[in-house]
Structures are given as C-alpha cells and as structure tokens.
Length: 281
Image (cartoon, rainbow, N blue to C red):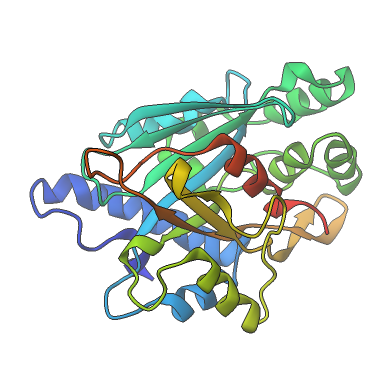
C-alpha cells in the first residue's frame, strides 16, 4: 500500500522526503487496519498504471493545550510543512488549518480541533477528564498521530459526547489517526469527474455522503469533493466492544487558478459537509 504516499516525490532531498513517506505510510496502515478497512478496496478499484496520488489527509483533535492543533501540526512542521489556510465551522464549533509541503506531490494535511469551551459544562469536563489521562511524553513522539486513543472510555460516555457533538464522540472513541485519506482525481485518466467515481463506488456497494449533494463544491470555487460514508468498525471500550462509525475515503478534483497552478486550499462549505461522513446513520 505504499503507493498511496506518492512514490514519485522528488529525488532531491531524498532522505528528508523518505521521512515524509514513512510517516504517511504509518498513518495509512493505521487508517486501513483500524478506521477504514474498505479503503483498501476503493484504492484497488481506482488504481490505474500509476500509483494513486494522495491529495490530503485529515486529523481531528480537541483545542486543549495538551492535544491542540499545534501539537498535531508539530511533527509535520518538523518535516517542512507550513500553514497555508485557516477555516472556521461555526455550526459545528470547529477551527481548522491546512498545511502544505514545499514538494507539491507531498500530501496536504488538514487538522481540525473542537472548540471545547463553546459546549456544555458537562461536555467540557468530560473531555478534560479524558485528555488529563494523556501521558505528556506520548505527545513528543510523532507516533501518537496514528496511535489511537490515549485514554480510557466507556460506551456510555461516548454516547453522551456524541449526543452533543458527533465530532466529540468520534474523537473520544477513536483517538488520533487519519479519519480520511483523499484520492486526487487530477491524476486519473479513466475517471475525470467526481460524479463518475461516485457512480463506480455505488455500483460496488459503497454509500456516498449525500449531505449538501453527492458532489460538493464546483469549478467556480476551484475544488470538487465527495466521500464515502464511514465504515462501521468495532471499537473496544472499557465495558465492551461496540460497532460505531470509523473513517471514510474522500475524492478531490482541483481546478487551476488564473496563474495556471492548481488551487491548493479548501472550501469551508464543502468541508463542513464532508465532516458528516462520520455521522451515525
């Protein structure tokens, strides 16, 4: 599955780029094993002669000092990534930033955080109690990015959080890891439209996120996106194993700006609907 991490990354500074590839390979393995097993099938359906190009991954966290967005961004910044965009999702009470590497073939990284202080005192205290269990030293090893949950959690607490914020429940249950990888349609030859990919996936039994329409965005905003609905995966809680929404697979088509370069940012209105790929059906 190393194809997903862009083997065509530039040869210059190969040792540095090898570290980038290694990190994304670890994230990919965690993603297909723990969060979205069906991604391997989607990957095989879309792979042509060239390895698939991964447009971006997305990570979730809480905006608390121990685990905030800056802590998740740090390992990527150490590999040369730079912040390139800020986004606000008022209804979902989220803040996000995206990061890009100087090598344009390296995947972009989209990191969001839940604005915990904007929720009920019960949710705030519950989340703080979870985060207080995180060992400080764990956050200094980049492996935490694909390390899953760093706290104990029972199913009732998951349900309590999810009732107020689907995002909070998902993050509490799964911990750290890529909630999605994203196939870049710009490199594909057989499929040039997002709707064509959606049709193929539906034909193969996948459910497409229809919130806001199956294809989110437009050429006018220079980005079109779609995604599968999240896999249902088994998660171990302190009081048993339960099946809940895991990760999903996204597809993106980018359009050129006036200077001819592909648009590299994100569209808040579309991303807002992509978040709902992990909603409980």
